[in-house]
Image 1 (spheres, rainbow, N blue to C red):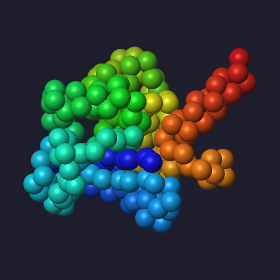
Image 2 (cartoon, rainbow, N blue to C red):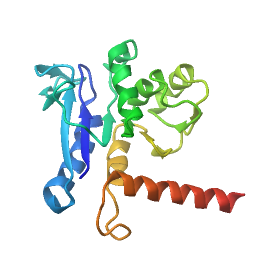
Image 3 (cartoon, helix red, strand yellow):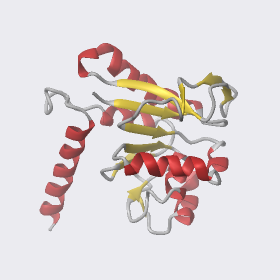
Image 4 (cartoon, one colour):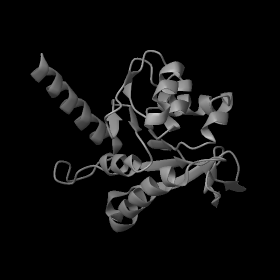
Length: 202
């Protein structure tokens, strides 16, 4: 079973989370036998105003949310406040430390950088914030031309619509993994593919 948590906060960019959420929710509803679930999580159970004015309420607070195998962090104007939110950054580190696949869309990558999760990793974000990403994490290998960058335990997507491409990539491929055993199998597959690519380049 794969549980996916989509993070919400004040000022989150609507398409950053809504696009991936729709892709992932379609997976959970159309293929229930795969055992995947998707839910939203935020600091509060009250209404949040997103970047373009949409008001949303999360399914869970951080304290009530079930364990998640995948965490998706959107960007938006509200991410700037999250860069200074120590408790929020600690939560990102905790999810990563527990082995969750931590992902970001657009400027959500800045929060991952502020949490130290992009150290010595390739990553991308919205082109207008690539410089800021490098400021927050000088060791990051910027990939400005990539729609999304999969570095194993961390996946970052570029501008808003790239999050949909990333969400599609998170879903295991039934042709290669008939049982769709979940995140662990998908992660093992990605690592093996990268190792093979590295051997070809050597």
